[in-house]
Image 1 (tube, rainbow, N blue to C red):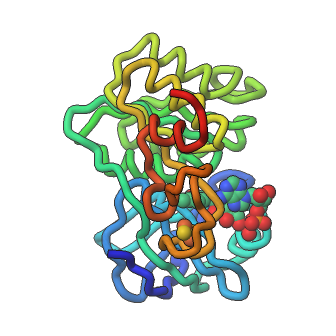
Image 2: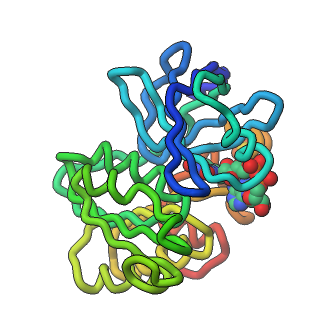
Length: 257
Ligand SMILES: Cc1cc2nc3c(=O)[nH]c(=O)nc-3n(C[C@H](O)[C@H](O)[C@H](O)COP(=O)(O)OP(=O)(O)OC[C@H]3O[C@@H](n4cnc5c(N)ncnc54)[C@H](O)[C@@H]3O)c2cc1C
Ligand code: FES
């Protein structure tokens, strides 16, 4: 069932995660269905647009949902100017999801705000599966959720394009190395499309269960407008995703598997 109702939510807390990115802790005026890792919300910013944002945390004891937002354009900039106590409109949680499975060894790969759904997965995987997180960013200041991931028990590996922290180079190179040296069952990736295509190929060629959390331009978020089609596949990121098997993701974008 799609939860298309817009529910008001109060911003209880705002945390500066890095110079580009803030987390918003939101308390809906009535409880939303429990979100699961990979799912997103359509977030309506009064006077601006409704935009898709991944759930980056869930705190059921206080009925609080966290979203983590990079300042990229008009609506996300307006969000960054909001203060605690302001209200947003939420539709969701929407889309499919991944549930951590007992005893599995996961390699999570994220770049930029792509780490947002992954940190939620790590929260839920605590005490369930074994998680390694590979995080990439342009430079060290833009790395996201390293300490939180470590506190939740994940092994964290870092790459920066400029070598200011961790491995110097792209996170895809770091992942190639990790997959050669360590034992994983499943790889899950979220970030820019070029990164996702490379990670999907690495995962499939290494015979790992491979999941991609995809992005696209969304208008309705609930399967009505067609604006979020993945390539020309007929698959809608909002309804059929945002989580896709690596093979399905590559085929949808016309990349041979
Ligand atoms: C399922 C899903 C989950 C998302 N989760 C997050 C999240 O957790 N945190 C976060 O910060 N962002 C997330 N995004 C991206 C976010 O929705 C966009 O950054 C936002 O809509 C930009 O709105 P804007 O008005 O600020 O910028 P705009 O002016 O609309 O765009 C700013 C720039 O970003 C580009 N852009 C906008 N939307 C996208 C997109 N979907 N894919 C690629 N490029 C885009 C534009 O081409 C432009 O260059 C997610 C997107 C999807 C589809
Ligand atoms: S955003 Fe409208 S169909 Fe997906």
